[in-house]
Amino acid sequence: MFNRFERLGIVPILLLVTFLALSCDKDDEQPVISIYGNYVVTVIETEGQYDFVNTGTVSSNLMKQVEDAQGYNFSANQLTIIAGSPDLVNMNLIEPGLLTTLPDNIPLIRYSNVAKTLNVDLEAGNKDFIILNSNAITEEIGRIEEMEMLNQFQIKVKVPQRIYDFNTKAWVNTIVSYTFNRLYV
Image (cartoon, rainbow, N blue to C red; front, side, top):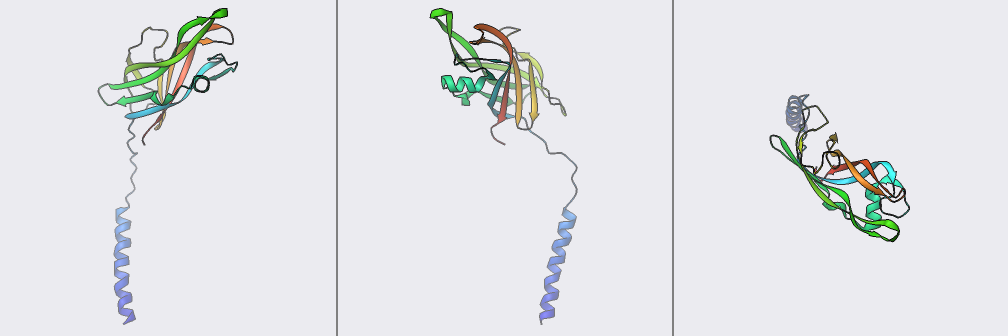
């Protein structure tokens, strides 16, 4: 009797192994990566090192200095890519605003959100977005210079901006790089 159950038990196992072997087809196709959705800013750095908020700290980490000194909440600084022909990008960047000038000619600067809208195209197999138009106020300051997909979860945006450096007590033109991370994967 044991031999009969042993023979009946081996048949389903053989069928299962055969099914698994036939269903495991080698698939060479790469998964489709969707770039569309929301990204939040995680890094904001400048090309040079500056004191952005008059604390005596000189660094290229604009985001950290503004967070620490002004309590700025960067959760609203997002980038959204909407599918279309061409694709639409909405993003929030930060810009310094001169509120007033204090005694000894020291400016009082506050950073605030500035919305930018772009039409872009990302060619298959390419990591650089082609910027088709930019709704910037001026051509040289604030215009999105470069937008690059670092990987399927990160996008880097480079923008020339005018920043006040408290270390040198002068306005400087620099490139500000924003790194946005995908919110939902």
